[in-house]
Image: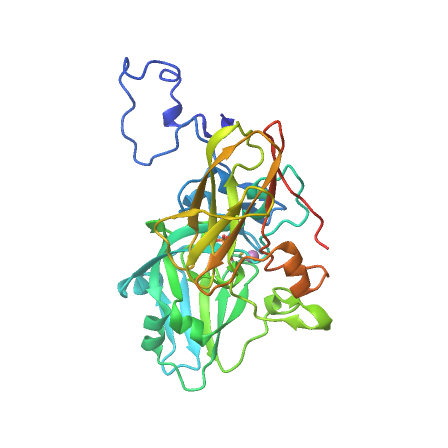
Length: 385
Ligand SMILES: Nc1nc2c(c(=O)[nH]1)N[C@H]1C(S)=C(S)[C@@H](COP(=O)(O)O)O[C@H]1N2
Ligand SMILES: [Mo]
């Protein structure tokens, strides 16, 4: 038990270690908290990110206080009464919305992941956990107003093909979003898992673009400007652009490709011989996960894992495969297949497709875990080259 959670109402020393049937329990509280025996934690790094403890979670929803965070200039503190969203540019009637205005429109709710496109720690070592390797993905049930509704309200002028989305943090982070995406499934979200967005997730408003790289999901959203061309913002330079073979680069590579990660057994878990379930999550920014294959022999053969419902498009999906470990050293791996037929690539396939240079974004290789004869499970860390 970590000290972090101890000290709340549910850590009453009077009750700890006693027979729970022998003493009156605690009274109800205005806001709940975790059992003092549970203390899942994000890992903050470099003051700019914190990572979701994927291996400590169940199901597919990330508890809001464990959603990963990525901030380019910290978390602003915004008074929702004073916050405004301006929708202007190539529109018939520019409108300034208050947060309350937005809440009066018909609400939409959907569950999807947000993943940072920089979500692979290429410097990982064998003692890396899924959290440390790829904890920059989290899932919530988001509620807000559809962009289609807002665009109908302002009237899109013919020829408008792009939109600038701008945040009101100290970075004034901004991205260019194509109109097709806005008219497809974009929303301005004001709620997350049943309550107002957390400040770290963009309170009071964020742009939600299901399946698109985290960076385009602009937080603390204050402005949407329609135009006939992309705006070429700071995040649309060598940043958020992928070098390819032959000295060319891929710009606006915004959709997150299918991926999976085993969350148990992984480091630091100690495996016992016998039956257990290999578990993990798989997701795709293009649609639904249709299959996850798991190898327990280092990639020689693959078994179909079972998928746990609900299987939603552009959403973390749980998989599981019962497995009897015979106590011999081996290697585990998983690969996801989505409904476009895309199969999660190996590291070698990715390097072949993208070239050997330094890659920062959109790295979704099959990951391997080594099981030692003493039951230790280690990440198979290999240099990215
Ligand atoms: N205004 C603003 N929006 C932002 C950012 C930011 O720094 N400022 N970070 C982006 C990046 S790089 C990512 S990965 C996601 C992270 O969202 P989260 O912190 O809610 O997980 O928000 C994006 N939206
Ligand atoms: Mo990101």
